[in-house]
Length: 292
Image 1 (tube, rainbow, N blue to C red):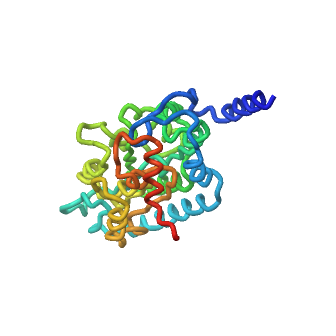
Image 2: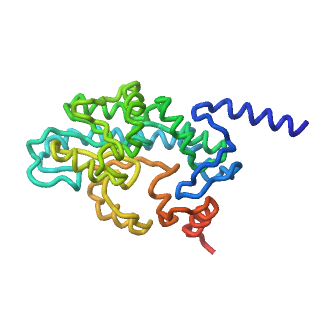
Image 3: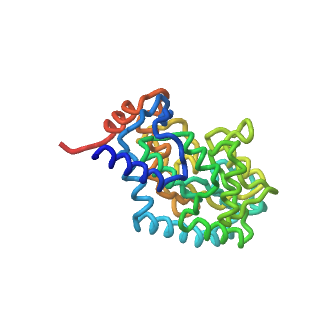
């Protein structure tokens, strides 16, 4: 009877989260390569996703950041000699204004898919992610829609620079539009990874593309790569880069929290490809600084 009850409980649990439906026994690549076996201990991602989905603290941090970003737009508009993009050079004072925003966990909330993966025991499953993106159902991050609309009302073009794949453009555009974000086709304000040959995962080339025609007032993201370019920097170097640009944070660079995933996580295991799930977990444990 216990086995039967457990099976029924599992079926009911999975039915609550249909957003990214696929077989929980499928093999999926781990973040750095290798495979994630079925039944993986999900506690590693459970805590972060639970905080994002349930805590008042997460919502307060987001809304506070976006409120300050909105207030900073007025000053940024007046200071025509300043740009938020390190890639922007030359005389850009007469360029029309723009802001550049990341999409995932900056504009759109994908925690439902993260929750689905945690419940099925996956660190990352590309099939689940593709199914989620295709739904075009991600809700806005708290504060993001008000900020984007405020910028648009001031005559500021909003560019969405995302590392979603180029093949996911239609679904991503539909998702943003359905939530009320100001996404345009002329100019094309949704810039995806590999949409052009030179647009890789490093977003610097896309920031430079925008900077050729617009003065970039502000950058908003959840990852250090949304603000500057670096080549597989370790945790200590990432902190050094952040501190070297201290004057920009809260002025024309606005960072949002993302404890679920990101380059910060890959830095803890040296961005090494081909690691198994267990190897990645052991590398993360080794990066901790406990007291003895």
